[in-house]
Length: 300
Image (cartoon, rainbow, N blue to C red; front, side):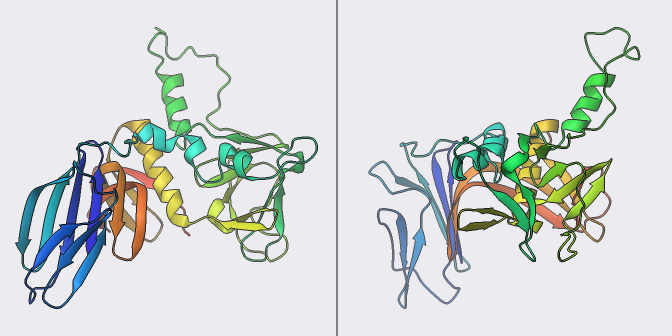
């Protein structure tokens, strides 16, 4: 088991590798993008998130209880760091408007052609031919709007507000609002008409279809949406909207308290390719009651 991460703000690579308590180290060396750890019986290759250069120098080393820990400094900023805002922008999200426009084909009228289908039976649920797709500004837009309308700092009479805002957003019949993990539309059943599978929920007069219960279909391609992407974007949206890094995700049956430590990391973990723009979090499953803000998460 090993973990190697590139910390762009520190311009540092950190590596931890389990070698074994019965093993002794013979040599540790750097190749172009691999750390080689040699023992009397084997050689462990640890892929590095960034390539080794002449400027890469070891700055820390320890070997205790069979675990090797090393840090390397690199003067070359090979990868730019990402902010929460950059990661949370809609054009970086899977199945956002920008993502759909970029990868789906267009017809003779310059209209992007794609369909959202039931992930169970592949029946067509949404067809792009006659619909307009709009990105939601933020997953937590509603609480921000509630605050703005109730607490306008430049108005002396907060209660005398005649703006036409009723606390909810309602797409028209030919519109689909795209959130971080769902599609919001009107006049649509939350169940697949063909197989009866549940695709989402009806909420405040609109239908919210969960992306992970749909497939995106275009040309000969059928894309699925990994459920973990919903949590990833929820975390980014929550940090951006409320500037907090500790909160609790809660479903009907479980809860997880998380603390967001870092973001924009490049990481390699045993048998997994390098992950880009990763989040680093501490978490506790089913914690005791805390005062941290709760984020409700739909059951999968």
